[in-house]
Each structure stands twice: as C-alpha cells, then as structure tokens.
Image (tube, one colour):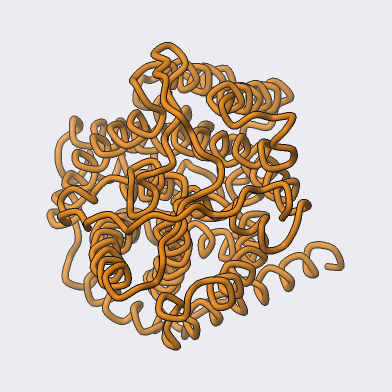
Length: 466
C-alpha cells in the first residue's frame, strides 16, 4: 500500500533465552480461560459427557498453529499482522477488523457469567448491575501500570498460576476411575452411545466451543501485538503503548523493520522460531488443553446427568454445590470465587485485546488523520466504548450469560474462517522462501480454514432457514 512506509532493514537481534520469552501466551491463554475452558466445554461435558472432548483438543491445536503463523509474520517484519494484511489486501482490511472485533465481543457474556458466580458466592441476587460494575472496574484497572501490555500479562499470570493448580487438585480428588476412562475414550471420539457428535447437540454451541477452545475470533490476532510489544525478533524496533495514568514517552512505530535473509539472520530466525514455538506450546497449548480437560472432567464427575443442568451458567453453581457436598463448604465456595476471578480476568483481557486491535486498525484506515503517536488515546476510547456498550446491553435486560457467549462465539468462528485463509496465503507468498510455512503447517492451517468455514456457513444457514 502506498500510504504505508516500506519496511526498514536491520539485523535480526540475538535470540532470547526461553524463560525471557514467557509472557504473551499467558494473555491469550487467559482470554480463553473464561469462555471455552470454564464455560462452553464444561457445559457440553455436563450435558453430553466426555465423548466430545476430542473437539476441544482439536480446537486448541488448530489455534496453536494459527497463532504461530500470526507470530511468524511479526517475528520477521516487526509490525502487527494487521499492517501486513493491509499491505497485502488493501485499505478495506482495517474496517473489517474493527467491525469483526467489536461486534462479536460487544455482548458482555463473560462479564455476566463472572457477575453471576460472584453474586452466588456472596449470597446475593444477580442482576445486570453487577455485570456493569465489573466492566467499569476493568476500565479503571487499565489506567494503572506503566504499559498496557504489562498490566494484562501480570494479571493473567497471577490468575492462571493460582487457578490452574486449584482446579487440578480438586479434580484429582473428585474424579473417579470411570470418569478418567470416559476421558480416554472421549479423546478418540467415543461417547456414551455415540461417536464424535451426540444427538441433540446444539450446533451453534458446539461451533462456539470450537472457536473458544483457546482465545477465539480476532483475539488470536492480538498475539501479534503482544509479541511485538514484548520485543520478539524484529519487534524490538517497534515500541509499545503506555498506560493512561502513567504516560511514558516511547516512540511507537506503525510499520516495521525486517532483515536481509542472509545466512546469519536466517540462523537467528530459526532459533527464535524454535523457542517461541516451545513457549506457546507450553503456555498456550499444553496449559490450555490441560485446563479444559480438567474443568470438563470436573463438570462431568459432579453434575453429569443432573436434571437441573440447564443452558445457563447455573451448571457452574451446581458444580460448586456438588464440590461442597463431597469435600467441605469452603472448597465449594472457593471454587465459585476462583471461577468468578477467572471469568473476570478473561473479560478484562478481552476488553484490552479488542481495544488494542481496534486502535491499531483505526490508525491503518488513515495514518495521516489518525496518528500512531495517539495510539494510547485511541486504545482508551475503544476501551470505554466497549464498556459503555456492555452497560447498555445489561440495562436493556440482556443478562443471560451463556446465550451472550454463544452469540459472540458463532460470529467469532466466522471471523476466524476469514483471517485464517488470508494469513496463510500472505505468509506463503510474501515472506522469504527460507521462512515460509512448511508443508505440514500449511496443511494443518488449511484444514482449520476449511473446518471453521464449513461449520460457520452451515450454522448460519441453519439459523437463517430452519
């Protein structure tokens, strides 16, 4: 694109140690914890058993490979995936990403779910007011800390490092051998009286769960922004946006810096590539799949077959009661509190990721009018637009958590279908030959593209004409 400056040139920086790379994947994992991990997959397992858990592992595996293609572009070119897609496909791309980010996530279903479990833990009646208060609290939190990225990373690390071990211990205590046997069978698609998909499975909910087996929707694309601001590879030269109350003068670059594909630079790239794959595999894929499986087994072992399990977040409350009965009341209550905190953290990162995506794409619509130096201001404008939209939705009476989550998830799955194909083609045609996706990665991401597209189009068709 003519209005985007060409990529500058520099040498690829020396690769970091693996432990120094850890960070960005915690944010994207935290985004998924409250949607797929805590709500949709445990809900499906509570209703249909462990025979569908294969799809959770498949979904997060797809997202791992998609995320790495997103990281690949930024590692090499030091600019966000949105800048790359705009270079490749034109000026309409930023408008699409603003729309497809804000609309699906405008429904504050995760905040509603967090408010529901917090209200029950406190023994008070839930209303949309609680969800609205949580959204406003999230907005205030984003005003502190030095950098927006660092605030998200620290909060998600804390939640995950406390929440995941607790879920692991409580699941080990409550799950019986028969439940673990159900898991083993479910990983190959064998359910109780069905293979792969049970009769009566709501397709929209299943598609939403697939999209949220990880982060989901455009939130995966935010990984590009986080690895850039962390300083992976050529992202070292791009800068990062500061917090509202702690403004730090740091130059932020819209367009990136790449390197000549000589032997030394390519060698450094391969080391970077190997290490960031390990980081994302451990933090995002392994921890995410582990958590989804544990929470699904917990739901299966406590409330499966319970006639009171409905299409709402109430199944989490039923879980807490079952846990309290089989242990002590405090453990059941603590489970609710941790569920509320995990959901809060997810909505918190969703707001931040959406605002970061939208502000970058706003600049891309017209870099002369919307200056990259004002990126921090645009971030907070989009942040509070989302919060106020959520408050309005609660005020209008849309307070049912699961319905809101499923609505957003179907829209996000369709968005994933679109950008997966765009990114794969861009990386296969725009990057130097030595650094393009391998045949195996191309095949896996291509299958994900077809998979998301088929389910999305079928679900939309079903909703329009059934």
